[in-house]
Length: 113
Image 1 (cartoon, rainbow, N blue to C red):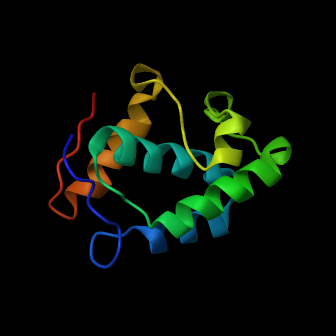
Image 2: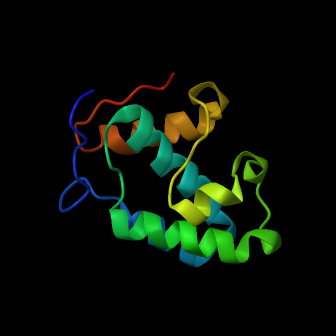
């Protein structure tokens, strides 16, 4: 397995994620999935570990009040553990595409499938 690229410095999408989540707390769901796809299946940390941990913590705390079409894909036990156990083929195409697009902006190629 290739070494996972760190999310520090250039290539880090923390600002974009924080802005989206600040605008709508429902964005915790897609950012959790986008970051997970990129990290677990693309071997690229799109956001910092600290932000991912915050997303997990906030998503777990606010879960019942959030509305998002992909919320059913998130297991609360994963959030408590700070991880994601979603099967590769269960990620929506929109999540895979968003992760690939964001990574490509920094010259990193991650799979869409």
